[in-house]
Length: 280
Image (cartoon, rainbow, N blue to C red; front, side, top):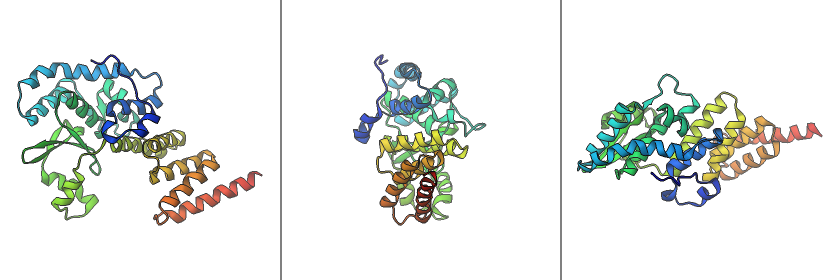
């Protein structure tokens, strides 16, 4: 166990290449916003405790699919990790400190647990930013083995993947399109998806302050993310921060002048100006 485990900081993350972004540490950094007393070393120790009993077992296994089977058995059967079907929209499902202690999560947080355990054991498991539910993939001799972390790491057939993709791609899902969407998700993209999930949860409940915090963190990771600029600007507008709203929404239009919602965004900018005039 690495007793010196510490959280990264947002400024440093912005300058890192994707393959240098520490996934667990960065996910815990997201949780630190909500849990300022979060024990990062304790969370790391929990993950390492999952790994230690597997080391000697995996040393005796040659194939990565069988190693992954042992990892899934440890996580889902022995330790009881599970998808939180009953309270899917509970924000705790997205915060890694809560996921590690409650052993409940959503697809992306459970995938992150799988990926971190697999990484420490030398198993090349990647995340897949699949439409709908986040998945994981493992290279095998004749392609990839795709698994569903929200449902105990169950392997998914090509037909089932195609069926899941149809609502997003139409009835005909060519093999090329399916393989493209099954590409490994870089760490930065995984973190952005986690933050987008949290943003949706908070803003759907009118919690604009936390929603703005999520979009601000996305912009720390991807400074010119147009969608996050728009959403932060709309959040600022709801919170009465007119200058910030105008700046973000204006930048959004600069980056995306032909957006479907461009006219609505322009109207929101005008409204911010009118509100300022009324205050004078």
